Image 1 (cartoon, chains in turn yellow, cyan, green, orange):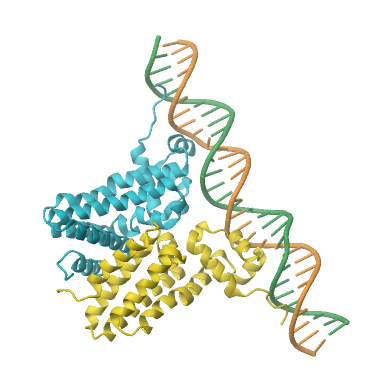
Image 2 (tube, rainbow over the protein chains, first blue to last red):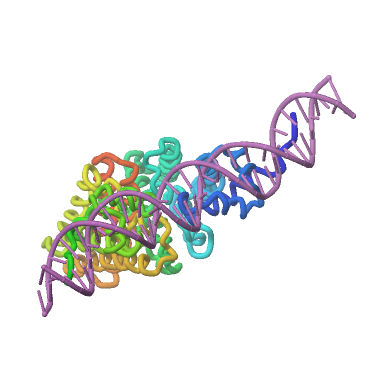
Amino acid sequence: MARPREFKEAAVLDRAVDLFWRRGFEGTVVGDVCDATGLHPGSVYGAFVDKRGLFIAALRRYAERVSAKAIGVLDETPGGADAIRGYFALLVDAMVDGRRRSGCLMTNTLVERHATDKTIMELVVRHLATLEAAFVRVFVRDGMDPAEAAKRAAGLVCFVQGLNVIARTRPGRARLEELVRSALAGFVEERPT
Amino acid sequence: MARPREFKEAAVLDRAVDLFWRRGFEGTVVGDVCDATGLHPGSVYGAFVDKRGLFIAALRRYAERVSAKAIGVLDETPGGADAIRGYFALLVDAMVDGRRRSGCLMTNTLVERHATDKTIMELVVRHLATLEAAFVRVFVRDGMDPAEAAKRAAGLVCFVQGLNVIARTRPGRARLEELVRSALAGFVEERPT
DNA sequence: CCGATTCATGAACGCCCGTTCAAGAACGAC
DNA sequence: GTCGTTCTTGAACGGGCGTTCATGAATCGG
């Protein structure tokens, strides 16, 4: 019931995601977000209260878009091995020449420093749990024992975090694919118990 | 040939390592280091030039002490599986109630933002290579084909990075040990090719 | 239209933090 | 002892960045 907002929050958040993703929270200056969006400080603070508020909104946006898209592959690909291979193929592609060259915003956030921030911590931990649950669904769908599926899913989540770290060294596609092949041999294919 | 320094660089660096490890580069204030060491800004800048200089010196110290100690287990434990199990046992112990609760300074640094800093990047990448080489030695010592050893070593390094990330969520010992068990089943024990 | 409300603008503020600096103190060389 | 050099001290500076604020514009309800 007054003057309507002239910018779309979603578009601003996409820019913010990009910046936080590449440069981290501390490394990103609110002024950068303003430059990238054409917004002025007042508008940003009017919409998101805080730099922290902007960051949290960006985290949520990341979870809903970037992250959900990758996890979607796991649920939508029929065949367990194919689903997982498809998931990692998507990751590797984006790590070679896409936005995942900077790893994963969630992983970066977990490492950066927000261990003391409850809200942020919860978002990140929930993300890890979501990914793990998706892996579990794939394995169980394939007929694996749920307990064994849980173990392997946790292992895969850990491996994905490792990949996200390694991505920051800008490895070539060959190296990434070799890593994935090696890990999948351990986690996806049959293995002696 | 004048007034000698009153503090030991090593002791200062140990403090700095601790702070950078827990709070990151941006999250650590030079004043914090002064408080922790009793030094005054002038002394710190006299000895290390920069905050960056202090950080790089701390990184080197970390590599020489913390990191080398863990890698040492790999070389000094006879028996490949025992060596690797010993290495991860040390990691897990320190992640549960030691300084590795904050993961690994190298991993954290790689994620934090210094992708543009050549010197820092080199230190971190060299650290990863050192760890990888140690894993390779273990495998080869056990009679494994060098090419296969290289692949598995790279996979283990990646997994260690993942562990370092997961450590930041403060998981319990049980979860960490399960992760390690799961990964070692894939990388260390025999597996079908 | 008109008032109320919200939004946009962009300059400005205040704090924090990396860094410097001037003064004094301690030591080695001779 | 004396001089020169290096270290220590702690206050101070300067810039950057998160945040605010006063002003003007735009929109909606009635």
